[in-house]
Amino acid sequence: MIQVIGLGKNFAERKAISNLNFMVEKGEVVGFLGPNGAGKTTTLKIITGFMPSSTGQVLIDGVDVFEAPLHTKKCIGYLPEQPPVYTDMRVESYLHFVARLKKVARDKLAVNVDYALEKVHLKDVKRRLIGNLSKGYRQRVGLAAALVSKPEVLILDEPTVGLDPNQVIQFRELIVSLKGEHTILLSTHILSEVQATCDRIIIIDQGEIVAQESLQQLHTNVQKELRYKIKVKRKQSDLHKTLQNTDGVNLVEVKGAFLEVSFAPTKLNSEQLAKIVVNSGCGLLEFSSIKNPVESLFAELTRAKEVQV
Amino acid sequence: MRSLLTIAKRDLSAFLLSPLFFAIAGVCSVVWSFTYIKKTIDFAYRSTSPKMIGQELPTYFDAVIVGHISTVNLILLFAIPAITMKLLAEEKKTRTIDLLLTSPLTATELIMGKFIAGFLLTAGLIALAFLYPLFSMLFAEIDLGLIAGSFLGLLFLGASYVAIGLFASSLSSSIIFSFIFAIVLNLFLWLLSQGTLYSDNGVLLATMDHISIGENLFAMVKGQLSLSSLVYFISLMSLFLFMSQKSIDSKRWR
Image 1 (tube, each protein chain N blue to C red):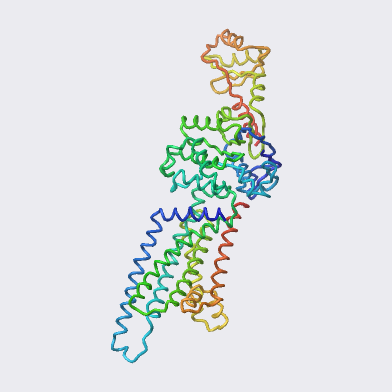
Image 2 (cartoon, chains in turn purple, blue):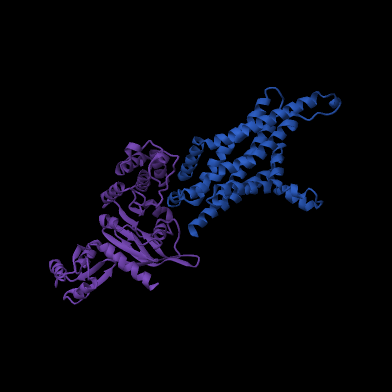
């Protein structure tokens, strides 16, 4: 559905993104991850036709965004980081305005506006001025505007920034409910959001793709190696040495007051590891599993880059 | 075409629901009321003055209405930038431009939609300015053709100021900058003919007169509906609308 081929963008001398290649299949929800300033928003703006690329091309359902922008823009619903809402308009009339801009047929205007209001749970506030709504509601209005033309592709740029925890959960549920109906590219730097909503992730750092994997694949990879976090009262260095010499342990790292141990589950299990720690007499205070595969991969890939720089 | 009207309708209703337009219209009508009444009283005083016995009196149109149009132009020179300053600069400031530039509409449709909204509001101000001469027709004999010519002249002038203001608004996200820059451009075009007051170079004088907005307005006010003035105003409008369109397009391609 979305095909990005050799995409690059330079701002004067600075390279924002270079040689990006990825695909998003129809109906897929893909997380577009990266630290701040990685080039996520630039990439999304190029895909939506807001700005052109310096090199490469973007195809939406096989049609080039730069050659037929009026056609591709009809297929895309875009929610930028700051929702593009007019504070002097009422929710319902704003959605009518957006639907007309998106060239929704006259006879479908009311149906589409109703669909967007229903989907984003805005019916109760449809007659209120957008300027009087809270940040969370405005974000919803922005999402409703992206949905009002029932586009095949939804591009969401950091949609949960600035929302309170309850609103974040509601937003995630909403995105999950949109699965299958739309192809979604979701940019974020909040990793738990990706785990909760996406089928696949693309990690970008300093304008380049550093990983593309399905979440399922990521979990499988992680199961090949387990990571545990251990905190002891004394003699941390002795325990460090003991663990390093233990069969099955791949890596032991000191992370502040903690030791992080990676081991192959085929050779060692967590019960045995705990026993080794207790028997060392170092005074076990904390023993926990590190289970976040996206976080681990993200940290590993983006930190590796930082070191190179 | 549909997108163009959608944009125009939104901007028009946003203006009519905000106090800004009514504040501008209020200030305009206060100034025009004061100056128009003063001009009428002066005319009445001169007409009855013993000094004027035996001398040819100017017509009511020449003595009062031409002066009124001059005042209207002076006020519009500032009032129209106050209307147009928000048209694009605010869209950029509030990032609603993201919605417009990712919607299936061309930069021309966007600019023309904004222009139509600005022009209709300006036409409202000009109609307000013409209530005074129309009211005077109740007690004075005024050539309706001259009034119509002046109205048309001011509509063309207003449309040119809107195009200039729209261009100024397309350049930055600062509303204040758009306002001031539009006034500077308007003043420049107005004062072009004044700059050559002390020159005796015939070619220079004629050229400046041709490209001065004031000379072309008063050519129309005096009942000379010349093709050159119409071409002048249409060219001026087209030039600034074209530059606004390029300015918006350049944001896409920068």
